Every structure is written in C-alpha cells, then in structure tokens.
Image (cartoon, rainbow, N blue to C red; front, side, top):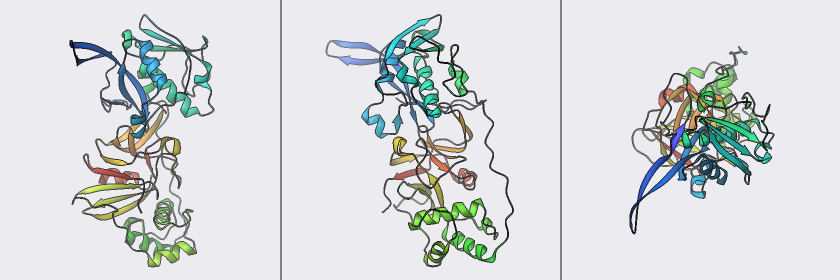
Length: 365
C-alpha cells in the first residue's frame, strides 16, 4: 500500500499516512503468523510517498530506507535522494526521539533540494516506530549545522515542522505593456485558431501568454524552441493544421502528456481544446508513462521535501501533478511533475475534473 504525504496549512493531508508500526497477517504452512511492517518514505514527484517493508524498529525502518526503492517501484516514478551505500552508524529511540547517526556520505551534495529531500525521508521514516515523534540527526556522531537550507538540524525535527510552509507564495511577474502590432495580432489569431492560445490572448502584444503559445507550437511542429515569432515559425503557422489526439478516447475530458514533444494535449470529445507548453521530469526523475486519473485538485499544494509552493496543482499519479512553477523550460526539468506556465495553469485547473483520465506517452509519433 502506498501513502502520499504533502502539506497544506489548514487542510487535511492528501492521504492520511499511518505513522505507527503496522501488522499484517499472512498464512503459513503451519497456520497464521504475524509479520510486523514499517513505513519507509521515498519521493514521487514533489511529495513524500510511503511503502511498507518488513520490520518493527526505527533501525529496521532506516535500514530499509537506505536500501532504496525496488525496481518495480522505480518504474512507477518512486525515487530516493539518499546516496547509495550511505553508512548507518546507529539508531536508537529515547523518550520519543529517534536518534539517527549516518555516515558523512549522507550530506555529500551540492544540490540544496536533494539535501532537503533526503533529510525529509529520514525524518518521516524514523518517526513512528517505537513511539518516536521526533528525529535527531547526527553525521559521524556530530550535529550537521548549516547543511540543510532553511532547516535547522541543531535539535530534534518533527514532521509538522517540515510540513509548515516557510516561504511566501510565488506570484507571477507583473504584466508589462508592450507595443501593439498588427503582425503579432495576426500570428496570435492563427495560434488561437490552432489551439495554442486562448481567443482572449489575441491582443497584438507579444507577452508571456503568446510566448508560451509559440513555444508549444514550436514543440508540436518540431521547430527550434525559442518562443520567438521568427520567420520559420510564421511560415509554419500559415500551413499548420489543428493538432489531433494521439489516442482515441471517450466523449469526455482527458489529457495526453507527450514526453517527446514536451506538450500536453487538453482534449474534450476527442477534439484538442488546447495545446500547452509543459516541462516534465528531468532524466534522473523522469515522469513515468502510463494511464492515470486526476484524484484531487489543490489551488495551493505544499511540497514537503522541497519546501516550495505548487500552485493550481492537479495530481494524477501519487505525488506527480500538473502545477504552476516559476520556471518552465523547453526541456524536461522537474522532479517528475508536469510543470505549467502561469499563463495556462489556472485555466487548466478550471478545466480539470477529479476522475479525468491522464495518459502519459513516451512517444507521440
């Protein structure tokens, strides 16, 4: 069983994750026997996700964490940020505090987000077994000071502390007025006719919405991805036809995420309503292909491991979601989620429905 743990102040967790040691019953040749299990926390997209492993103590749980996900779990996009072969020096639980001492390899990284993720993995995993409610991390017996960005490891750390947002909600840049151009307006109208721009975006100004639409068009057509209305893009606009879904579906709403083209086709009644510029998981945290369904909608979702806001989030595969993000490059760059520009995220949030099918395709050709 998988449990997802995210954080939103004043909201219930995405899925309630059990923290205490669970017991499962299995039938053996000589009768029923009890097998204790612990919850071990990895990552899927931008959120924590737990899997059950054999064990009963905090030390069992941490050992299982250091062993990493199985190959089958990896195919589902479940990752660990804990360095392979990290030494486990000791684990003990005293007065509700799990004392975890790891080798120095655990903190050898220049990636701030990776450090935050692995710290969160340890705190979530070691909390629960033997009644632990806090985790004190030690590295080679010493206190790791100034290592985890924005998080003090000088004393015991709680899950609640990690689930509490400590940065302001990101806001889109203020709109800038640009000169109105008849040629830009004509190109915008073609983009709108083809499904790359909303009709409301036809204003003659080459702003962020137009640039996102141009980039989506260039991705779909296999052109250079520079978001510029250059000669090649303008020529192709004149001869292009409206995109069609890659697969057949029902008459309702659905989405196809095309990993090779880095676009999402928003579909209703087997007609493409809109083509969105997106950025999926980077090579090390690739978005897994497959068939999924939207299971929730969150205007503001808090990423516990990476301590950042995910706005207009539409999760469809555990901790993997469509969401707005400040940076949406023309290539795969996320932790596994499908990043959207602020010019499309709120619109897509309104379009999406719980239960809506999402198909992630490795190849659209």
